[in-house]
Amino acid sequence: MSEDAFEKELSGLTGGFPGGEKGLEKFLEQNPPPKKGEAGTSASFDFDQVKKPKPPELPLLLPGMIAIVKNPKNPFYMYCGIVQRITDGKAGVLFEGGNWDRLVTFRLDELERREKGPPMVNPRSVILEEMVEKDS
Figure 1 (cartoon, rainbow, N blue to C red):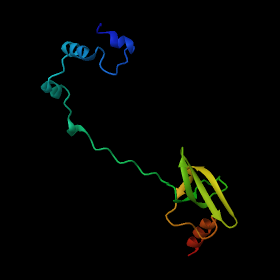
Figure 2 (figure 1 turned 120 degrees about the vertical axis):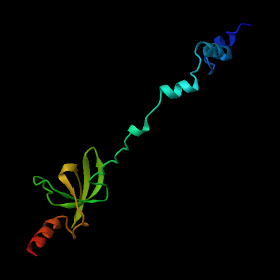
Figure 3 (figure 1 turned 90 degrees about the horizontal axis):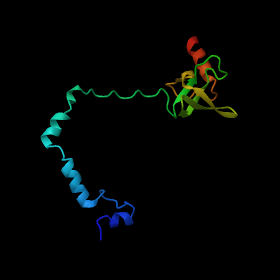
Figure 4 (figure 1 turned 60 degrees about the vertical axis):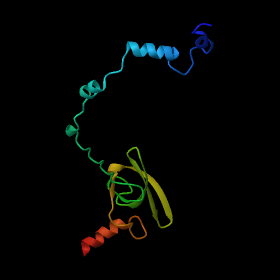
């Protein structure tokens, strides 16, 4: 029986090194592994030059935060709502108040984070809060 009989039977799909152990031994004779001392000096790495990576900047808005619409051309200007989701540079903001609820999508540059909680009952109450603060 020839040495290649098993390989021919499985079409070379034996799952091991081509040529089996004899092929591996032949490959190692032709391509000896590098010496341990050689590998360490040629591929040395200077860790002193590596700078510590900066932490990523936190996004201005995250789901659950309170946001105010700051675009004066938008009909929801100065309305205050709760951020529901953020995707592809846009945020879905839920406005609740009175007898209606509405989820509206805005670009992130149209929104501003609000430090206080949601205003009173109506989303437009943010406008009233600013007027009251100016008067007092």
